[in-house]
Amino acid sequence: MSAIEEGMAFPTPKAYLHPMTDLSATPAPAEEDTGDIVSNEAQRPERQRKPDWIRVKAPTSKGYGETRTLMRDLKLNTVCEEAACPNIGECWTKKHATVMILGDVCTRACAFCNVKTGMPRKVDLEEPGHVAEAAAKMGLEHIVITSVDRDDLPDGGASQFVKVIRALREQTPNTTIEILTPDFRGKMHAAVEAIVAAGPDVYNHNLETVPRLYPTIRPGARYYASLRLLEEVKRQDPRVFTKSGIMLGLGEQRLEVHQVMDDMRSAQIDFLTMGQYLQPTPKHAKVAEFVTPQAFSAYGAIARAKGFLQVAASPLTRSSYHAGEDFAQMRAAREAQLAKAAAGKAR
Ligand code: SF4
Figure 1 (tube, helix red, strand yellow):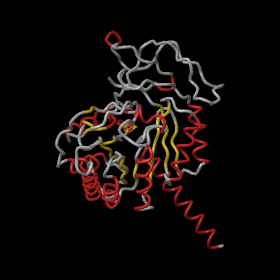
Figure 2 (cartoon, helix red, strand yellow):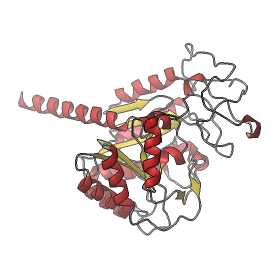
Figure 3 (cartoon, protein in one colour):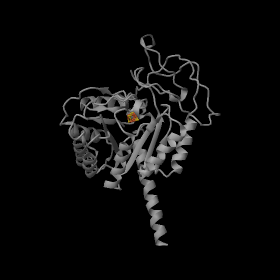
Figure 4 (spheres, protein in one colour):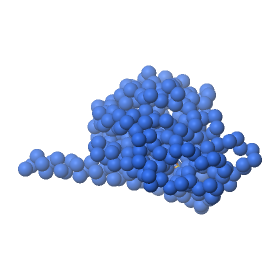
């Protein structure tokens, strides 16, 4: 079931506030769902009602249909569909999709993720060419490539990322490339070295949540291993922008979120994304709270004060949401910073 499906009348959540956050301006949630998404209420198990600020429109535009057809024709998977992203209508209308390489079956079973778990199929050797063809046909200025975890492969799937980056550089040399990789557990150094050498513009790896919640939310991963991966990217090539994100609403505390920001800055991460966790199906981790847009803005302000070059923080923020626009802003921010530093030296 898609996380964008709405329509059930559930009791109003008790709290919309993030712990220790001022919620005085929080609007009351509507009693009836007025969302536009068609649903099949009779067959649906009980789910948490979402506040008004999470509502999204059903994807029906012509652009959405064209993106869908192209992905089907080229046999490409997208995280937009597999993760049941609420932004799919908006993004696909604008011809922005996040391609998920290395199949649609993941070797991990994180409590927040909607992607199927099991034994993945063989690697598709034509996939790098198809990704590049899709980018060319869509005329993409910026592309985001992610993958399932492939702990079954000797390199964790790193070589497929490398092939995709090379194919894109060859076919669409003006497209900027953002990759969102797994943690390459047990083979991180070699994987990062190979991928960074291929020259992505942005290297993203999500921390997903605060370290205290890893055992329940991200049991197959280690918080500090993920931080080290991002640190390693910078060590290998400081020109590559690094990016990471966390979901809010899983039960984290405000000061824990601040600590994650500090850890990220210590690892020289350039770009932080924060969005609301949404429970994809009743089998997944429950939403502990719906964090208000005001609380997201407050977190965003704190993150900027801590020195991130770019911050995206809102209920519907996802790693790849508005990725192209955010990349352009981040690049401009770095150029301004370098120019300022150079002017300071010249004085
Ligand atoms: S936010 Fe990212 S994952 Fe969601 S629809 Fe947009 S491109 Fe796809």
